[in-house]
Image 1 (tube, each protein chain N blue to C red):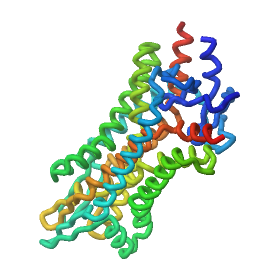
Image 2 (cartoon, rainbow over the protein chains, first blue to last red):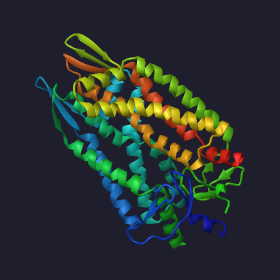
Image 3 (cartoon, chains in turn red, yellow):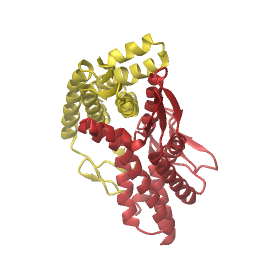
Image 4 (cartoon, each protein chain N blue to C red):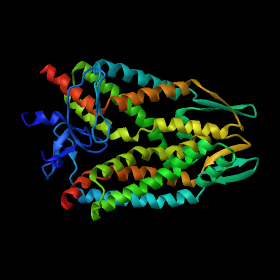
Length: 210
Length: 199
């Protein structure tokens, strides 16, 4: 335990790998790396409750984003919808199994799994239960994190629509706005709240209990 | 303080003291990898496979358009040129950046990092860590083209006009995944280690 204590007070910059000593931040302050000016960590206000509320909201927006039409186009009076799952279903139909599989994971299954696990972890933290389980789930989150490409998918939608301008009439569906809301919340959950904050929160919650 | 002995756990970012042998992170209990040699070869092998896949990704069509019985095949470069001709310059630039610029820059950066670990170069380890960080951040953005093709194929399948993905999309998607895997299996401690040996 003695050996552990000073290690918790240290942090390594994710960008340039410089070692820093952690200091306690005041409200709304942010710690930056003095070598590369990269953000080291934020001071979060009431992370335990905020995290749970935001993750549930993110989960709901994801459901909304994947069941309704994202965009609709019209060519010669016939309307065609684009829904999130249909993007990779079409690839499977065209016999592009490898791409279909890759795309389905990058834009659907990994974001979904990520937010479900995230919400579950926040729930467990709020209930102060499952110390070991949280450890395993946070490892899964860290492994999934780099493969979430939903925000790149949004840019791709815009690029695809620009290609269609002039050929088709385009209108945005409910899911387009839900998708934007999901991406904004998801970026907040994954970039602003770092996974190391959740590890710290886990220590905080369970140390207080003991 | 011996700075180089401290390493961040790749899973939970906790700071650990590198004892030089098998290391298990004190916070997440996940193994902090120590197979320097294996990591190097894995990274190199994945990178070379990705570079080979980039060739068919550019030669074969990525997008096939059937329009009133007439078929048009577009390669990645061809698509960019036709976008440019139609006057959508920002989109052409996005695709150029995502499908041509990003993969090539990633290849060069990773190759440079892998070679510099073996040979030893003048640039500082801080710069190399930054370089590695950039490669990791820009990597996924090359998927844009594959997603665009998938979206177009979903939206446009009418009796007279239809768009179907081409073989290049498979090669390209695999290329992106493999470069990302290559970057992930690259052990960033090799950068610091190399500095140790030279000084």
